[in-house]
Amino acid sequence: MNASTANQIYFRQAADELDLSDTMRSLLLTAKREVQVQVAAELDSGAVATFIGYRVQHNDARGPLKGGLRYHPEVDLDEVRSLAALMTWKTAVVNIPYGGAKGGIALDPATLSTRELERVTRSFVDAIHDLFGPDVDIPAPDMGTSAEVMAWIMNQYGKYRGFAPACVTGKPVEYHGIPGREEATGRGVGIVTLKLLSRLGRAIQGTTVAIQGFGNVGTHTAKFLRDAECRVVAISDASGGYHRADGIDVLEALRYAREHRGRLEGFVGGDRISNVELLALDCDVLIPAALGGVLTAANAEAVQAPIIVEAANSPVTPEADIVFAQKNVTVLPDILANAGGVTASWFEWVQNRQHYQWGVNRVRQELDRILGEAFEQVWQLSSSRQVSLRTAAYMLGVGRVARATVLGGIT
Ligand code: GLU
Image 1 (cartoon, rainbow, N blue to C red):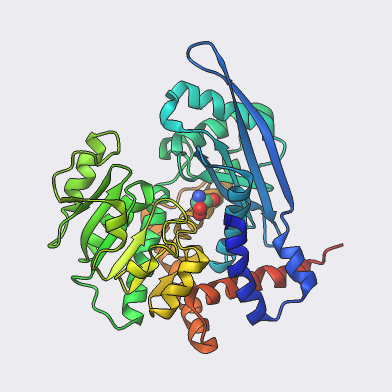
Image 2: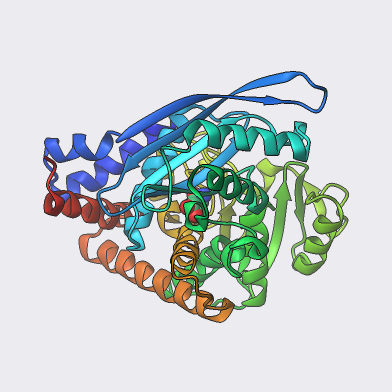
């Protein structure tokens, strides 16, 4: 099953609960615009490489289009289309005034030098500069992109339109970004995990957590939950997993990764396990924070954790979702669990536009408030309608977009 078909299944479950008309379903499922562009850039060798870049602008009924930019070899139009729709529901679940979009370039950033990545990024901006901007569509980091990439985007955009820091978010703090944005996705994952534990009547202290992925989201999630006195028993990255039943020293792992170009390879603070073994670990909370589609019909039965928090986008396939429902596993869905990133992006955009700085305490406070409110609304809807947290989150998000579509009119 391809990625966008999978998300449409989740959409349909919510649309049925909301009793949406066929007309509204078609309006909400069809992307407003999908572009594919050639991205040609000179390599350090002097040769010219050609890549394919995408931007899918799914829906802007609630505000300007918003969503990350992914650099990964497996990026294709279907994946970007599905991630763009997720952004529409995500911004609506947390009730921030944006629509949803996503972009990407099919490339492996590890094979390019920094200067090559810069040229590729600037070339992509050359190709799409008239399709985005502060009031139109605002890109941000996603898998394989960073604050540095966002700085190049802002700078290149400025060559066409002048100074416009709000044209992109997730920028470096020293270059029109804000403190608190980088940690925000992981912090948000942590906040809603704690809320869920409380709602389920479980103790927080000593809760055992396994986290797949040690990138921006995985590292900040691990740190937040460690600070909240949960026990992080396993972490992993592309080099494999590291398990320690009485708790990984998260600060040590962070230090190790920082000193080894972001990688855990060679980390001795835990027994080596595979990524497959990590997903099946005996723990309280499993947090997939890396690639999509990692929990499938093939491995869902083996999962022992009673709680799964989707820090990555689309880590659970619809087939696995059915297995988890049958096993009574609680799944906290991506469009709520990882919405902290785009929420802090909104704070960055607001501050850029006001030429004003909030400071990190206010950023954290507002983030906690917004995610806390969204979690409560999803929880209440899930209880009152007797639906899963995923269906409740989709109902909240899809319902808000449908309402804005009716209010704004379509002709
Ligand atoms: N890429 C992130 C996401 O999937 C953040 C998007 C944003 O900040 O616009 O939610």
